[in-house]
Length: 166
Image (cartoon, rainbow, N blue to C red; front, side, top):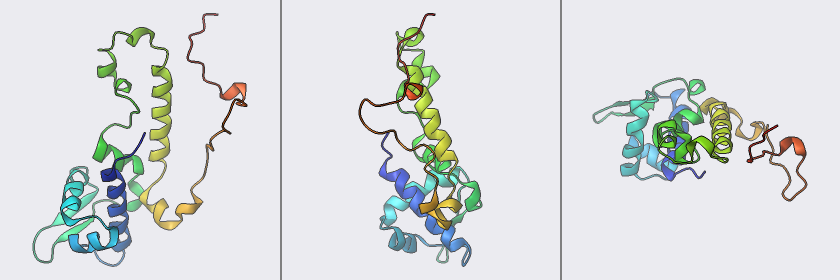
């Protein structure tokens, strides 16, 4: 899965708003652009779904701008990605309504793996908050380090895609 620029920029924008939350309530779009390198026009597009989800509140006018709508500790990376991109699914058939249209739905040997991986990714994204990223991003746990490349995988980590009939 590759995150879109919009999702990555949304996290960046929210982090700037979170940093400014202690000093000032509102950050104008020009300041956000200067801190993130994202154009003012693109910021306005990105902010819209974040406002709909209550992560950002905005004030119009000369003294207007944007602020966090919730505490940084209550906004997860998963929240941001879902607001910008929709469900955290590796492939379309992870969505049950899409999967039901697939002729292989009942006997697909790969869908369980994609579902599992999608849920693990979502769980990990939901475990990281903006507050975590502000305090010490380098100390985020590497809970599930990737196994070494090659054929030397342990049998317990092997995921069989072939149905077993014992």
